Length: 167
Image (cartoon, rainbow, N blue to C red; front, side, top):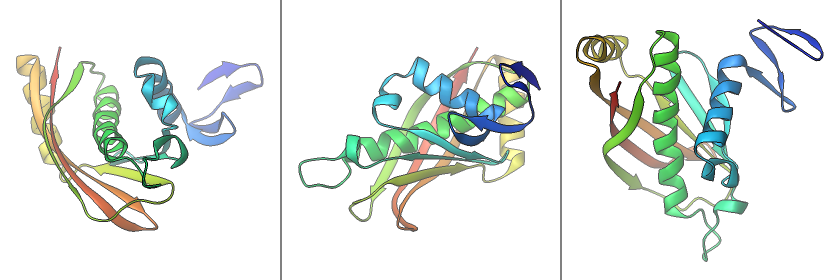
């Protein structure tokens, strides 16, 4: 809970005209303040449920010369869905670190011709627990995350990224 002009806000409140949790709102602010390109791309946090993070972006600022979404935009939103998921999961553990993408692969299946969403989810909680244990012990740890970018509810992009977090 925190106080604001309109009183106290609960775990789920209205921010920027959207129904967002404090975690979701905080992440969107971090993305827009610390990675300004995300604001220009129109990236928004859609939902975070503790295991998965979904981001969305409109086609207009991400369109290429073929009137489809630029591949670099699709890659960026996929990378950021993993980055954001790690940011939130570390925050839940009371931890903070520098999150970087170390290695990645991406497969583009179909052109994206409308607004799109990227979702990254933890495959197993035990994998994340090992990752956190390594980070606490060594001040650095790696984790592999998978994300999908969807358009019209079909998967347009598969992404696999290895992220490194260091203190």
